[in-house]
Amino acid sequence: MLLALFFTFVSLVGHPFLYGADNNVFHIPIIQRAYDWPQFRDDAFYQSLTAYTSGVWFLVALFGERAAEPDVFAALHAIVRFLTFWSLLSMLAAFGLRPLHRTLAVAIFTGSALAYDYTGVGGQDLLLTSLSHTSLAWPLLFASLTLLARGRMAWAIGLNGLVFATNAFVAIWNGVALLLATLAHARLSNPRIGLAAFARSWAIGLLLALVLAAPVLFWILQNTTMAEPAFDYAGFLRSYWPYHFFIDASSRRDILILAATILMGAVALAQLGEPRRLLAATFVGYLLVFGFGVVLPWLSSSHTLLNLHLLRADGFLQLIALVASACVFAREILGPAPVLRRLTALAGAACLIIGGKLVVLALSALLVCGLWDRAPARLRSMFGFGAPSLRPAFVLALAGLLLVGQAAVQRRQAQQDPWLETLAVQRNLADWLRSHTPREALILSIPSARPLPAIELSELQLLSQRRLWVDWKRGAAVMWRPDYHAEWRARMDEVAALKTSAEKTAYACAHGADYLIETREDLARDPAVGRVIFTNQRYSVIDLGGVCSPAATGRS
Image 1 (cartoon, helix red, strand yellow):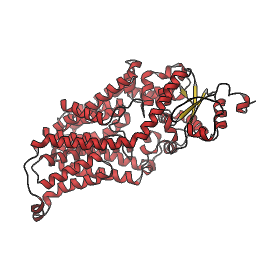
Image 2 (cartoon, helix red, strand yellow; image 1 turned 180 degrees about the vertical axis):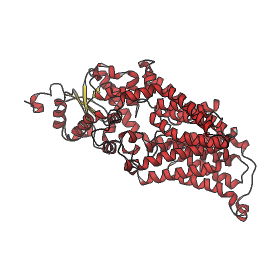
Image 3 (tube, rainbow, N blue to C red; image 1 turned 30 degrees about the vertical axis):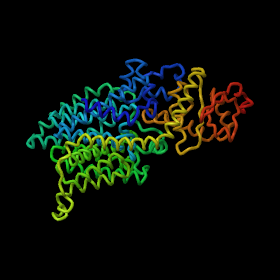
Image 4 (cartoon, rainbow, N blue to C red; image 1 turned 90 degrees about the vertical axis):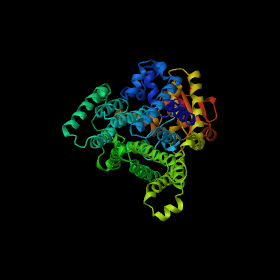
């Protein structure tokens, strides 16, 4: 437990918690029950959140609106991160790794860039800086494999019911992986186990899973329609966020890095030995899920199937590949291998920590370690000079790895500074709106032209507690409420067509907006029609009071 606390501390120091960002725009309003607030009773986006399919946030909401405060979210985030490391250490112990080996393996995992943020192809969230219900999938997966390794097959299957309650489509992916893992377990623990005994364990496990998942399953059945939408759903996904669903939306570079990561995982798992077949079977299960996700858009346009987000299974492939590779490198570094082999493993671990294209070098290091014993005797005699075990130097090795990890983290944070700065400026704007505008105010925001311009103000409604006319992020509600598509698509297209300040003002007035938000650079080119009442580093707020008249809008 102390080790788990230590790795949690290191992880959170390197990747500080961030409140209210990204998908928190869906989670926090559920806890606050903001859909019942007077200013949002006519807001179709917030009203759609009553159909959100994760039970986590509705459970947290039972503790009251205070549970949505930043300090509570930070505490929950730390608890989830601790459970992740604790369950990972428990899984490696169940797999038979010795204490020093599993400690070093988790140290490599903790420092690795591959463990954090989002995957490059499917966009699956890994260990994020913000609190997400998907984050619970990691400790639950590690706990399931721990139970399975200890011979508790029914409990391992039943735990997937909790996964369903937190994230339904992840539980479906897990079902495929667990089927292969339980088959591997049955073959390992008792090759003569009969079909009846295997089926009995699955029946008990499914019954337990059904009990745990029942409230959320009932909620989904009550609030989700299986009927196909009247619009081109696949076209909507491509225009909104294609990376979860279509492999051709990913760059060639990201696909090649993922391929190298999968191959790295396969090579590492082949070197882990017999007791780790459970992890290999689980890896193959997620690979099948991901492979089906690749071909699915060519086989079906069903919104139910597309909503399974199958490409996001690449996150599970990436983490398993990372865990397996870290275990191999830890064994090589601490074992009695020749010095060159140990140095190769140490270089491979450093490549894991830095991540990105260096995954290819980590794969190369694994291949060297794996093929070392098959190399010609003359070659091994040239480079295979021995050295005493590195166990006495374990602390120094761990400290060095963590220092390299921190350097990589600082580099990644420097790359994210522009986004963090934009978010800080947006929060400044939101604070002003919450303090200086009526609660029932309607706001039209006009982001500047960028590759994904509408992401820029996607957290503003959450942070300001004022109703926005439209933003990009809320388009996700179409996935659980397809009937929201008509409103969201129409508003996004209409706002995108507005070019001049006069057009923006007329549109805002025609739809009852009280305030207009523009960027300072846009106003420098085309001055506001109304009165600018607030300006910060990036945004300006225009008061439309007294401007929205027939003369201003062109209405008679």
